[in-house]
Image 1: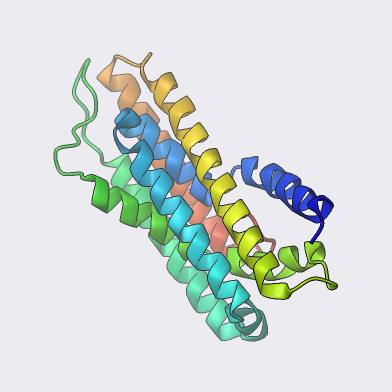
Image 2: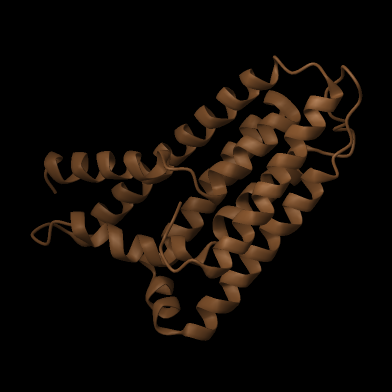
Length: 208
């Protein structure tokens, strides 16, 4: 594989990743609600989720989901319901006046699992990888080394993108001191997550 193939894939992936989707919205919501505390946990969950989805697509799961309307619909609804559940939880997150939201019941492992589940349970990502990756494969070179390099590149870029969104949102949160404002932010983020859950169940186009 030439450097041109790899650079084309990396540039296309970077452009696609910065477009907000369910995963980015989850990262931003956690950062706004809890600051930098869970930035690394959400980033790790996103990276592992992308690794799982991309590996599954490389192994043929994407083709299976594309061919099976029932399997695609079931996984799509599971992901949509999970997004709605997280949105409701964020809406109900308690806040204190002039204090950060109460995170005593949260821990990094749970946040990591949430980010991983939201990223992995998006069947459109799996189907998207099947349609996206082959465009950059050099048929004159060994197949699996190229796929491994593409997967590593995409996961690394996804992690950098998620961390960037988390840090930007966390920095914006530092300016928020009022519990009332924090409550509005949490409820707005929660409402958006529920909305994305509904859209995820109805959209046919791939989004990340």
